[in-house]
Length: 415
Image 1 (tube, rainbow, N blue to C red):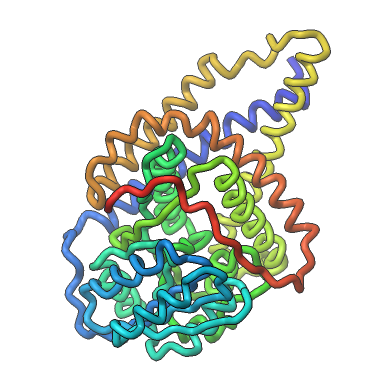
Image 2 (image 1 turned 60 degrees about the vertical axis):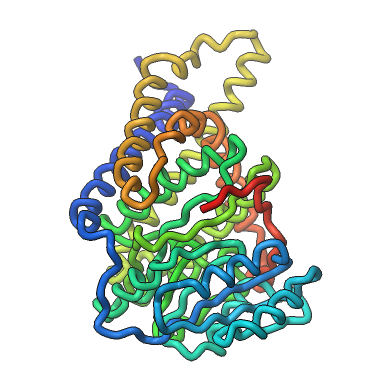
């Protein structure tokens, strides 16, 4: 029987996440046995070059003191901390000044007006003394051994321009928080491992990343007109043939949105930023020298098509129901297809659980909550990707990106 257009949409909406789940699982398992089965103790470094830790801040009076105090407990012996107050309207500047009086290796930069995270990072990078820069969010807690693992890559890889760490969720008091614990393990962690195998990493994690200053200087540091400066700088580094590596031992504890509005704003920003990068570097992708970027570019395009397919299928189902009150022809969801997809996702989370249990104990208690991920987060992903792409198309290229205080959650667990 000849397939209709709607059948193609339904099939693609189903088979794309199924296919990618196996790609990510296979890639992550290969990565694990190739690079992760060694010692858990931090590597012994032949030297300890100065590392500059950059902390951009905007209205972070509730969290900045904790972030800085944890940095002072870092075991790496040679660091400086540069905090940038980007036009905060709360007590962030006052708190930083008080901390600077007590912490000798803390320097602070103050902007009178909000200039955006990229501008804050640029100012801190130019003021830094170290060749290696570690950037973390102002609400994050960096593991005390993370820098050892990060610097190990730079010292052993002269073409390593960046290293992305392993974000972990701190606030787990709500359903959204619990689901995101699983998401950062089962989805984001597996994706970064797999991308490292089949080509390049799509982006460093904005909450924890490290860079070689020489590489940043070559590509022009962070651009101020991009919504997601972390994705943009990742692509410019990799198009300039620098490697970006994933370091799962470099743990960094962060706060995630726990309200629907906060989650939507975050995912829409991510989606728009990814689309801006895809559009900006469209011509560069077709060069043979950029062939290792083809995998992540194709993955993004296919995910964009999937997002619009899911939305179109949803619209067709609603129209069909309103027209004749029947959805019989769309009853594939609870059948064998939905069962296979759900089972595959649980297998994906189980594999990630086995891998990430090396770094964080007690993840198994979140196994129940992750089953809710496809029912809600896939819808959010499809909608945010579709809207974000349109916003990226309409955005003026010269518009400077500024930030606003994000949703930091409604509860924070101890790490």
